[in-house]
Length: 279
Image 1 (cartoon, rainbow, N blue to C red):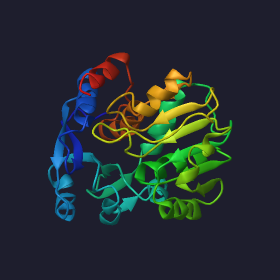
Image 2 (cartoon, rainbow, N blue to C red):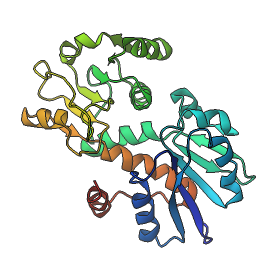
Image 3 (cartoon, one colour):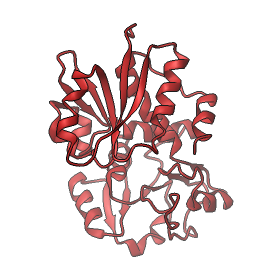
């Protein structure tokens, strides 16, 4: 049951002014008539160890963690969920009844659910998967795809050592390939995922030729600013189904809201439009 007392949560990062999470969580608080607020918590690098213990003292039920703190927070909380441990990063903290902090990572859940929202019959084992990038988002995507039964994940990154390290850490079904093979690595895939920042507003477009990509392959980008990256636009024009990063953002927020406020919120068309209006 949700508590009738005023609930506080927020987003901790540096910077956080660009975050859409306050719009999202405050929309849900209003929608469900829950007393509470979700606020920005700008915490500079080097101040994290001072900020985190303050959450319980200030009456927060928890917070989201964003860049650059997602990895460093791991070492500063009392307990880490097993899934978050494997991902090597946190994106959600929940203040426990005794004031201690437990860390979670809902990015993988958010990503998989965004695919299922777009294609309810989507299956991770329906064919090979190519993932571009080897940062934090790639970790969450690759682990969640493997957990869903993916049989072959081709991982490519501009710095090949990072892809090789991830493949070595995760083992089968992940296989690192050289960045120069990214065009050929699209042959016979059922899913293509961009987890790099290429194509994000202000960044150059991803250099990728889609000629080898099957027309039925789902093309996914974790970026949501802009909603349609050059990659997704090119894929749509050749007839491929596409999924942008907004669904991942919306879905990863649901278990966090549930943990803090006691309600598993719905993603309504109205909510999606409200967030899209801020992009």
